[in-house]
Image (cartoon, rainbow, N blue to C red; front, top):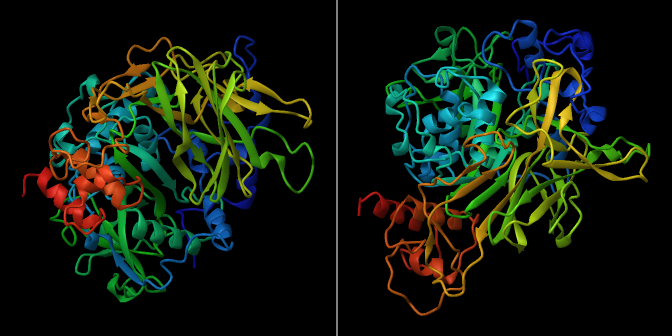
Length: 640
């Protein structure tokens, strides 16, 4: 189906030339020789800027700042992928209705009160749905540490953290940096009455770590209509097989758009603007159009089942139905979490995440196989101890993107491919655009103090901007970031002619007032296991290493984590030890961390083993399933 998606459509002329106009904030260039120009300046594509962001600039920056990038192209990307032989599975094709609540993984309806944190509530609620029943995560923690901190303030410039607003894409960057997710008891929402500042010691506390985050199309401004049927198929597949998906819609005209007797909402006006974030927990293709207000009804049946954040006194115990044809809909993100003890250290520079997409080489061969579809980038880090690099993460900017991962140890500063090649070209592909954590086929051993590089080559099927970068919005010609990063961290492999390839430091100014800071590539490690140490012994804390600025007080390294980390004991003895059933990390107690481990195994995210099976097969059927997860959760909560 094709649905009108936006309040107003940018005309073809405006959509083509608006970025060439002189905008107050974007008008300056790089006339100051003291500011290094990024090699990406040559490849910076203004047409990818979100028209809503440009409009926000033109209107004097009134209201919340929109995202920099327009993700509407993903609708076409998902449609192209669905049409391929290896495309999105048609697992939902014969499923006309589905309710995620029936699987027992949807948490309680929250009440945001008067706080403008619906986006954070939606993000952590969607994330929690990939775990187990009634796990409540803290939206206050997510909102607070999205905006609070040297790098965060430099990027967003927000001080009213609980009333400013946001969206789930910002939560992706926050959770990917291991700023959460934490249980709600760590920073209670309290029905929207808690506005307290949080302790800095909680910044990098994580009961759960973000593993993946999928991006759906949104920000559709430059098209009169767009075919969303493939996107709807993708969302249904994710809801059925992974968890809830965030969604934004216009919630300000309730009297004219909401039928309180049937709990049905339909924005019909082309001027309706998405202003409230919620989560999709199901659908009904046959939900009757007559359930919507008689004055304005959609043309066809079908609606999303949505969990709101206005408490259980509103709607159908906090839920409602939103027509597929709602004109204000903007789809957001899905999240996948794992227990916070999976890795102990996060090597990263991009603490705010994916700002913009770019390419790193021009189409120098002038062939139909566009060279700009492939980008190669690298981050160089310094090992904090004797560790094993077990996983890396990065973003893919299109559906069905492929990748290759290389790791080098003992590298020279500024030369990502110097030293020893320790991992050569681990390859794969990702069905969904977004953030992905990839477990390495072989862990790479790192020695304390040595430089190592993570090199990622990403190839898109059709979108000529395969590299996700973090950037900084400059306020003057000579403005450079003090905290976000200004060189010596991220590099791109580039050429003008296909012959003279070279690594160049990514950092530097782009056109129209942006400064590229880093490539969005992270590495995850665990300590090298001491043979003399019992495999069940736990480490003390998780560590986040963020070296994006030497001038930052606390953002360069954090070692606070409320969840204990443990070595993966897959080599444990087959003799039955003395243990507690449900104690998956062998720390002598059953907690939500154990629930997270069992849930990841039940969902196939984490590999099982004899060690885990002995502790997690609660009903003795020879496997760890959602039924076992439910029992472990009850033990953790003291119900049984």
